[in-house]
Length: 88
Image (cartoon, rainbow, N blue to C red; front, side, top):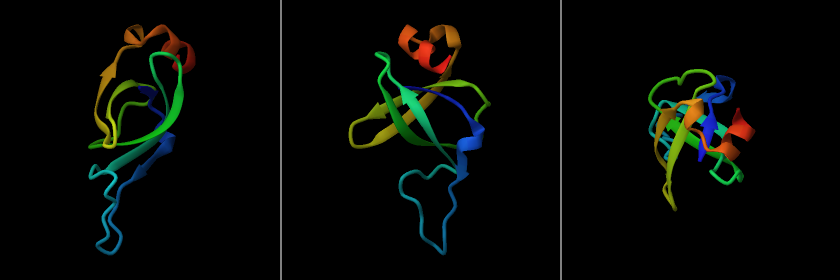
């Protein structure tokens, strides 16, 4: 899956009275519309250790049951055609 970063949709992952959000231990949480290589869409939540660059394209590494386990920034030219149509 791929996403385009929208920093308006970021939230801080803070503990609340000792209660920890187990979905991600990262300080920043993104909840964005993601698109896979065939153009299917899904809303995906993932964490990052820092605020990501606005409008950057991110390739998400997803595993069943675990969700997003990693990500990497990619250029717009590296996007599959169906993804570029939706996110571009």
